[in-house]
Length: 150
View: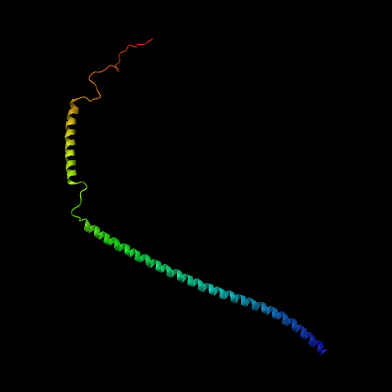
């Protein structure tokens, strides 16, 4: 009987060990999968940090390049402004028309004013040109004879 009890305990222990091993090994496998996922996530995070650092570094270089380009452009603008100010003195502003043209314009203005004064005096004494001295009688109220040709 001791052998039968020992055999039953052995079989029961085998089944208990088998099921315990299956249960614990599944948990162990899940832990291994989680550990692998955690290490992959950490590697992805490290790669992301490197990518962000590289992006920020390239952005910094581009901004420095833009800054130097702007400084160069500003210095060129300052030099151009200085050269332009030296080339055109403020005292002797260049006239729009030459001296001869201004004299001719002044003469034509004087001539036009003289004509206007003389035309004004003539217009007062003479009738307008659209009135003729000999009326044709076309718009007269008198009856006209009608001629009909056969």
